[in-house]
Image (cartoon, rainbow, N blue to C red; front, side, top):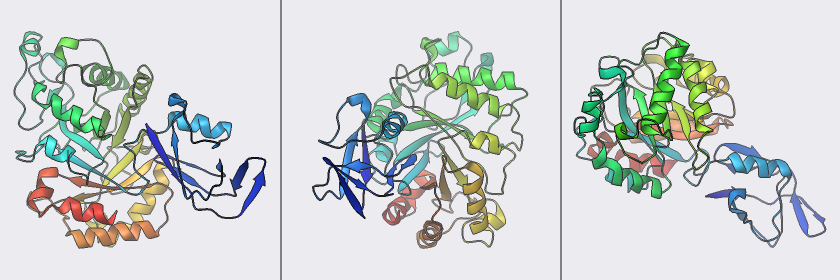
Length: 371
Protein backbone atom coordinates (compact mmCIF):
# COMPACT_ATOMS: atom_id res chain seq x y z
CA UNK A 1 0.00 0.00 0.00
CA UNK A 2 1.75 3.11 -1.22
CA UNK A 3 1.25 6.67 -0.17
CA UNK A 4 2.78 9.42 -2.25
CA UNK A 5 3.78 12.59 -0.44
CA UNK A 6 4.39 15.38 -2.90
CA UNK A 7 6.86 17.97 -1.65
CA UNK A 8 7.93 21.29 -3.10
CA UNK A 9 11.12 22.40 -1.34
CA UNK A 10 11.05 25.81 0.32
CA UNK A 11 13.24 27.23 3.09
CA UNK A 12 15.20 24.48 4.82
CA UNK A 13 17.47 24.07 7.81
CA UNK A 14 19.95 21.31 8.54
CA UNK A 15 19.64 19.14 11.65
CA UNK A 16 22.24 16.38 11.69
CA UNK A 17 21.25 14.09 8.82
CA UNK A 18 17.87 15.72 8.23
CA UNK A 19 16.59 18.67 6.29
CA UNK A 20 13.27 20.02 7.49
CA UNK A 21 11.06 21.67 4.91
CA UNK A 22 9.37 24.44 6.82
CA UNK A 23 5.56 24.28 6.86
CA UNK A 24 5.43 22.35 3.64
CA UNK A 25 2.20 20.33 3.42
CA UNK A 26 2.43 16.77 2.19
CA UNK A 27 -0.90 15.54 0.91
CA UNK A 28 -2.21 12.03 1.36
CA UNK A 29 -5.65 10.99 0.13
CA UNK A 30 -7.51 11.83 3.31
CA UNK A 31 -5.33 14.03 5.48
CA UNK A 32 -2.81 16.86 5.41
CA UNK A 33 0.53 16.63 7.19
CA UNK A 34 2.88 19.59 7.62
CA UNK A 35 6.62 19.97 8.24
CA UNK A 36 7.65 16.56 6.95
CA UNK A 37 11.35 15.86 7.68
CA UNK A 38 13.24 14.11 4.88
CA UNK A 39 16.76 13.53 3.71
CA UNK A 40 17.59 16.24 1.12
CA UNK A 41 19.32 14.84 -1.95
CA UNK A 42 17.39 17.21 -4.16
CA UNK A 43 14.21 15.20 -3.69
CA UNK A 44 11.10 16.68 -5.27
CA UNK A 45 8.98 13.63 -4.41
CA UNK A 46 9.04 11.17 -1.57
CA UNK A 47 7.25 7.83 -1.66
CA UNK A 48 6.53 6.30 1.72
CA UNK A 49 5.30 2.79 2.39
CA UNK A 50 2.84 2.50 5.23
CA UNK A 51 4.18 1.56 8.67
CA UNK A 52 2.45 -1.81 8.37
CA UNK A 53 5.07 -2.73 5.78
CA UNK A 54 7.85 -1.38 8.02
CA UNK A 55 9.68 0.08 5.03
CA UNK A 56 10.55 3.71 4.46
CA UNK A 57 12.76 5.66 2.10
CA UNK A 58 16.35 5.63 3.39
CA UNK A 59 16.97 8.36 6.00
CA UNK A 60 13.40 9.60 5.68
CA UNK A 61 12.06 10.11 9.18
CA UNK A 62 8.70 11.40 10.26
CA UNK A 63 7.36 12.58 13.56
CA UNK A 64 5.35 10.17 15.67
CA UNK A 65 2.12 11.85 14.72
CA UNK A 66 2.84 11.31 11.05
CA UNK A 67 3.47 7.61 11.56
CA UNK A 68 0.25 7.24 13.47
CA UNK A 69 -1.65 9.10 10.79
CA UNK A 70 -0.20 7.00 8.00
CA UNK A 71 -1.37 3.85 9.72
CA UNK A 72 -4.93 5.08 9.25
CA UNK A 73 -4.45 6.54 5.79
CA UNK A 74 -5.87 5.12 2.60
CA UNK A 75 -4.24 2.49 0.39
CA UNK A 76 -2.93 3.27 -3.05
CA UNK A 77 -6.42 3.58 -4.56
CA UNK A 78 -6.45 7.12 -3.22
CA UNK A 79 -4.84 9.25 -5.86
CA UNK A 80 -3.84 12.81 -5.02
CA UNK A 81 -6.63 14.86 -3.47
CA UNK A 82 -8.76 16.62 -6.07
CA UNK A 83 -7.87 14.21 -8.88
CA UNK A 84 -10.16 11.23 -8.32
CA UNK A 85 -13.16 10.18 -10.39
CA UNK A 86 -15.81 7.88 -8.96
CA UNK A 87 -18.60 6.27 -10.98
CA UNK A 88 -21.80 4.28 -10.54
CA UNK A 89 -22.26 1.03 -12.41
CA UNK A 90 -25.04 -1.55 -12.52
CA UNK A 91 -28.21 0.47 -12.95
CA UNK A 92 -28.33 0.42 -16.75
CA UNK A 93 -28.54 -2.57 -19.13
CA UNK A 94 -24.76 -2.57 -18.88
CA UNK A 95 -23.37 -3.46 -22.24
CA UNK A 96 -20.47 -1.68 -20.55
CA UNK A 97 -19.23 -4.43 -18.26
CA UNK A 98 -17.73 -4.09 -14.81
CA UNK A 99 -14.42 -5.23 -16.29
CA UNK A 100 -14.67 -2.40 -18.82
CA UNK A 101 -15.04 0.05 -15.95
CA UNK A 102 -12.25 -1.49 -13.88
CA UNK A 103 -9.87 -1.44 -16.83
CA UNK A 104 -10.65 2.20 -17.62
CA UNK A 105 -7.86 4.33 -16.16
CA UNK A 106 -10.31 7.22 -15.87
CA UNK A 107 -11.93 5.74 -12.78
CA UNK A 108 -10.62 5.44 -9.23
CA UNK A 109 -13.68 4.06 -7.41
CA UNK A 110 -16.69 2.01 -8.58
CA UNK A 111 -20.08 2.16 -6.85
CA UNK A 112 -22.30 -0.88 -7.46
CA UNK A 113 -25.91 0.24 -7.96
CA UNK A 114 -27.92 -0.79 -6.02
CA UNK A 115 -28.91 -2.54 -2.88
CA UNK A 116 -32.36 -1.06 -3.38
CA UNK A 117 -34.42 -2.24 -0.39
CA UNK A 118 -33.34 -2.72 3.20
CA UNK A 119 -36.10 -5.18 4.09
CA UNK A 120 -37.45 -7.56 1.49
CA UNK A 121 -38.25 -11.28 1.24
CA UNK A 122 -37.34 -13.21 4.37
CA UNK A 123 -36.34 -9.98 6.09
CA UNK A 124 -33.21 -9.70 3.94
CA UNK A 125 -32.28 -6.81 1.63
CA UNK A 126 -33.13 -6.65 -2.06
CA UNK A 127 -30.50 -6.12 -4.74
CA UNK A 128 -31.18 -4.49 -8.12
CA UNK A 129 -27.83 -4.77 -9.87
CA UNK A 130 -28.41 -5.00 -13.61
CA UNK A 131 -27.53 -8.17 -15.54
CA UNK A 132 -27.16 -10.29 -12.39
CA UNK A 133 -29.10 -13.54 -12.11
CA UNK A 134 -31.81 -14.15 -9.54
CA UNK A 135 -31.17 -15.65 -6.12
CA UNK A 136 -28.87 -18.62 -5.60
CA UNK A 137 -30.24 -21.93 -4.36
CA UNK A 138 -29.02 -21.17 -0.84
CA UNK A 139 -30.67 -17.76 -0.92
CA UNK A 140 -33.94 -19.29 -2.13
CA UNK A 141 -33.82 -21.90 0.62
CA UNK A 142 -33.43 -19.15 3.23
CA UNK A 143 -36.32 -17.18 1.74
CA UNK A 144 -33.91 -14.38 0.77
CA UNK A 145 -35.25 -14.16 -2.77
CA UNK A 146 -34.49 -10.43 -3.02
CA UNK A 147 -30.78 -11.18 -3.01
CA UNK A 148 -28.94 -12.00 -6.23
CA UNK A 149 -26.38 -14.60 -7.21
CA UNK A 150 -23.41 -12.35 -7.90
CA UNK A 151 -20.92 -15.08 -8.75
CA UNK A 152 -20.66 -13.81 -12.33
CA UNK A 153 -19.14 -10.57 -11.01
CA UNK A 154 -16.61 -12.07 -8.59
CA UNK A 155 -13.75 -12.12 -11.09
CA UNK A 156 -14.48 -8.53 -12.17
CA UNK A 157 -14.63 -7.26 -8.59
CA UNK A 158 -11.28 -8.89 -7.86
CA UNK A 159 -9.91 -7.30 -11.03
CA UNK A 160 -10.96 -3.86 -9.81
CA UNK A 161 -9.54 -4.43 -6.36
CA UNK A 162 -6.25 -5.72 -7.77
CA UNK A 163 -5.88 -2.38 -9.53
CA UNK A 164 -6.35 -0.52 -6.24
CA UNK A 165 -9.89 0.56 -7.13
CA UNK A 166 -12.41 0.13 -4.31
CA UNK A 167 -15.73 -1.48 -5.22
CA UNK A 168 -18.42 -0.02 -2.99
CA UNK A 169 -22.03 -1.12 -2.56
CA UNK A 170 -24.43 1.78 -3.01
CA UNK A 171 -27.63 1.50 -1.00
CA UNK A 172 -30.75 3.31 -2.16
CA UNK A 173 -31.37 5.19 -5.38
CA UNK A 174 -34.44 6.95 -6.73
CA UNK A 175 -37.45 6.36 -4.48
CA UNK A 176 -39.52 5.03 -7.39
CA UNK A 177 -37.27 1.98 -7.38
CA UNK A 178 -36.05 1.72 -3.79
CA UNK A 179 -36.99 1.70 -0.14
CA UNK A 180 -34.17 2.48 2.27
CA UNK A 181 -36.21 4.33 4.86
CA UNK A 182 -35.61 3.38 8.48
CA UNK A 183 -38.01 3.64 11.39
CA UNK A 184 -35.53 3.58 14.26
CA UNK A 185 -31.91 3.46 15.35
CA UNK A 186 -32.35 -0.26 16.02
CA UNK A 187 -33.28 -0.83 12.38
CA UNK A 188 -30.24 1.13 11.27
CA UNK A 189 -27.95 -1.01 13.41
CA UNK A 190 -29.66 -4.15 12.13
CA UNK A 191 -29.09 -3.21 8.49
CA UNK A 192 -25.45 -2.32 9.17
CA UNK A 193 -24.91 -5.77 10.64
CA UNK A 194 -26.79 -7.54 7.86
CA UNK A 195 -24.86 -5.76 5.10
CA UNK A 196 -21.59 -6.32 6.98
CA UNK A 197 -22.22 -10.05 6.98
CA UNK A 198 -23.56 -10.34 3.43
CA UNK A 199 -21.15 -8.08 1.55
CA UNK A 200 -18.22 -6.94 3.70
CA UNK A 201 -16.08 -8.52 6.42
CA UNK A 202 -18.71 -10.35 8.45
CA UNK A 203 -18.78 -14.11 8.79
CA UNK A 204 -22.43 -14.89 9.57
CA UNK A 205 -24.63 -16.42 6.84
CA UNK A 206 -21.69 -17.17 4.55
CA UNK A 207 -23.88 -19.32 2.32
CA UNK A 208 -26.06 -16.30 1.50
CA UNK A 209 -23.26 -13.94 0.44
CA UNK A 210 -23.98 -12.74 -3.13
CA UNK A 211 -20.27 -12.46 -3.98
CA UNK A 212 -19.01 -15.41 -1.97
CA UNK A 213 -15.77 -14.79 -0.11
CA UNK A 214 -15.14 -11.49 -1.90
CA UNK A 215 -15.26 -8.55 0.49
CA UNK A 216 -16.54 -5.34 -1.02
CA UNK A 217 -14.69 -2.21 0.06
CA UNK A 218 -17.51 -0.32 1.73
CA UNK A 219 -20.96 1.17 1.40
CA UNK A 220 -22.42 4.30 -0.15
CA UNK A 221 -25.56 5.89 1.28
CA UNK A 222 -27.91 7.10 -1.46
CA UNK A 223 -30.97 7.83 0.63
CA UNK A 224 -33.45 10.03 -1.26
CA UNK A 225 -36.47 9.62 1.05
CA UNK A 226 -36.14 13.02 2.80
CA UNK A 227 -36.01 11.11 6.09
CA UNK A 228 -32.68 10.42 7.78
CA UNK A 229 -34.11 8.51 10.74
CA UNK A 230 -31.72 5.79 11.89
CA UNK A 231 -28.90 6.74 9.52
CA UNK A 232 -26.58 8.06 12.21
CA UNK A 233 -26.94 4.85 14.21
CA UNK A 234 -26.42 2.80 11.05
CA UNK A 235 -23.29 4.74 10.13
CA UNK A 236 -21.81 4.33 13.60
CA UNK A 237 -22.54 0.61 13.52
CA UNK A 238 -20.86 0.25 10.13
CA UNK A 239 -17.77 2.03 11.43
CA UNK A 240 -17.72 -0.17 14.53
CA UNK A 241 -17.95 -3.25 12.33
CA UNK A 242 -15.13 -2.01 10.12
CA UNK A 243 -12.83 -2.12 13.15
CA UNK A 244 -13.42 -5.86 13.48
CA UNK A 245 -11.56 -6.64 10.25
CA UNK A 246 -8.05 -5.22 10.12
CA UNK A 247 -7.16 -7.08 6.93
CA UNK A 248 -8.35 -4.22 4.73
CA UNK A 249 -9.61 -0.66 4.66
CA UNK A 250 -13.37 -0.11 4.47
CA UNK A 251 -15.08 3.08 3.34
CA UNK A 252 -18.44 4.66 3.99
CA UNK A 253 -19.64 7.42 1.68
CA UNK A 254 -22.85 9.21 0.70
CA UNK A 255 -24.49 10.86 -2.30
CA UNK A 256 -26.72 13.65 -0.96
CA UNK A 257 -28.69 16.07 -3.11
CA UNK A 258 -27.10 19.50 -3.57
CA UNK A 259 -29.69 21.64 -1.69
CA UNK A 260 -27.94 22.24 1.62
CA UNK A 261 -28.43 20.59 4.04
CA UNK A 262 -30.02 17.37 2.78
CA UNK A 263 -32.66 15.87 5.07
CA UNK A 264 -32.00 12.41 3.65
CA UNK A 265 -28.28 12.53 4.45
CA UNK A 266 -28.05 14.60 7.67
CA UNK A 267 -24.87 16.54 8.35
CA UNK A 268 -24.08 14.57 11.50
CA UNK A 269 -23.95 11.50 9.27
CA UNK A 270 -21.92 13.14 6.51
CA UNK A 271 -19.33 14.35 9.02
CA UNK A 272 -18.50 10.72 9.87
CA UNK A 273 -17.88 9.63 6.29
CA UNK A 274 -14.78 9.21 4.13
CA UNK A 275 -16.20 11.26 1.29
CA UNK A 276 -19.45 12.81 0.10
CA UNK A 277 -20.32 12.84 -3.61
CA UNK A 278 -23.00 15.49 -3.87
CA UNK A 279 -25.53 15.21 -6.69
CA UNK A 280 -25.31 18.59 -8.41
CA UNK A 281 -28.10 17.62 -10.81
CA UNK A 282 -31.88 17.10 -10.68
CA UNK A 283 -32.02 19.98 -8.20
CA UNK A 284 -32.58 23.23 -10.07
CA UNK A 285 -30.70 26.22 -8.71
CA UNK A 286 -27.74 24.32 -7.23
CA UNK A 287 -27.13 22.26 -10.36
CA UNK A 288 -23.78 22.59 -12.12
CA UNK A 289 -23.51 25.90 -14.01
CA UNK A 290 -26.54 27.36 -12.22
CA UNK A 291 -26.57 30.45 -10.02
CA UNK A 292 -26.55 28.58 -6.72
CA UNK A 293 -23.83 26.06 -7.61
CA UNK A 294 -20.84 27.86 -6.10
CA UNK A 295 -22.64 28.65 -2.85
CA UNK A 296 -23.81 25.05 -2.51
CA UNK A 297 -20.27 23.76 -3.05
CA UNK A 298 -18.90 26.05 -0.35
CA UNK A 299 -21.71 25.14 2.05
CA UNK A 300 -21.12 21.43 1.59
CA UNK A 301 -17.36 21.78 1.92
CA UNK A 302 -17.67 23.65 5.19
CA UNK A 303 -20.56 21.61 6.55
CA UNK A 304 -19.00 18.17 6.19
CA UNK A 305 -15.67 19.32 7.62
CA UNK A 306 -12.15 19.29 6.25
CA UNK A 307 -11.65 15.63 7.13
CA UNK A 308 -14.34 14.47 4.70
CA UNK A 309 -13.65 14.77 0.99
CA UNK A 310 -16.13 16.48 -1.31
CA UNK A 311 -16.83 15.23 -4.83
CA UNK A 312 -18.77 17.09 -7.51
CA UNK A 313 -21.47 14.72 -8.74
CA UNK A 314 -22.58 15.07 -12.36
CA UNK A 315 -24.60 13.30 -15.04
CA UNK A 316 -22.49 11.63 -17.71
CA UNK A 317 -25.27 11.99 -20.27
CA UNK A 318 -28.67 13.57 -20.80
CA UNK A 319 -30.04 10.40 -22.39
CA UNK A 320 -31.73 9.11 -19.23
CA UNK A 321 -34.10 12.05 -18.93
CA UNK A 322 -32.53 13.42 -15.75
CA UNK A 323 -32.34 17.18 -15.33
CA UNK A 324 -29.09 19.11 -15.09
CA UNK A 325 -26.79 17.41 -17.60
CA UNK A 326 -23.98 19.61 -18.89
CA UNK A 327 -21.44 18.81 -21.58
CA UNK A 328 -17.87 17.93 -20.68
CA UNK A 329 -16.52 21.41 -21.34
CA UNK A 330 -19.09 22.93 -18.96
CA UNK A 331 -18.41 20.38 -16.24
CA UNK A 332 -14.68 20.96 -16.56
CA UNK A 333 -15.22 24.70 -16.15
CA UNK A 334 -17.25 24.01 -13.02
CA UNK A 335 -14.53 21.74 -11.65
CA UNK A 336 -11.93 24.42 -12.35
CA UNK A 337 -14.16 26.91 -10.53
CA UNK A 338 -14.15 24.60 -7.51
CA UNK A 339 -10.38 24.14 -7.72
CA UNK A 340 -9.99 27.92 -7.62
CA UNK A 341 -11.90 28.00 -4.31
CA UNK A 342 -8.91 26.24 -2.67
CA UNK A 343 -11.19 24.10 -0.54
CA UNK A 344 -9.33 21.94 2.00
CA UNK A 345 -11.37 18.84 1.13
CA UNK A 346 -11.99 18.82 -2.63
CA UNK A 347 -11.62 15.21 -3.74
CA UNK A 348 -12.64 15.17 -7.40
CA UNK A 349 -15.79 14.29 -9.33
CA UNK A 350 -18.47 11.60 -9.49
CA UNK A 351 -20.35 10.45 -12.59
CA UNK A 352 -23.73 8.85 -13.04
CA UNK A 353 -23.40 6.38 -14.84
CA UNK A 354 -20.61 4.32 -16.45
CA UNK A 355 -22.50 3.06 -19.48
CA UNK A 356 -24.03 6.47 -20.13
CA UNK A 357 -20.54 7.97 -20.15
CA UNK A 358 -19.30 5.50 -22.76
CA UNK A 359 -22.31 6.07 -24.99
CA UNK A 360 -21.75 9.81 -24.69
CA UNK A 361 -18.41 9.77 -26.46
CA UNK A 362 -16.41 8.46 -23.49
CA UNK A 363 -17.38 11.48 -21.45
CA UNK A 364 -15.38 10.16 -18.48
CA UNK A 365 -12.05 10.50 -20.26
CA UNK A 366 -12.59 14.22 -20.85
CA UNK A 367 -13.44 14.77 -17.19
CA UNK A 368 -10.52 12.73 -15.86
CA UNK A 369 -8.08 14.56 -18.13
CA UNK A 370 -9.12 17.84 -16.52
CA UNK A 371 -8.93 16.51 -12.97
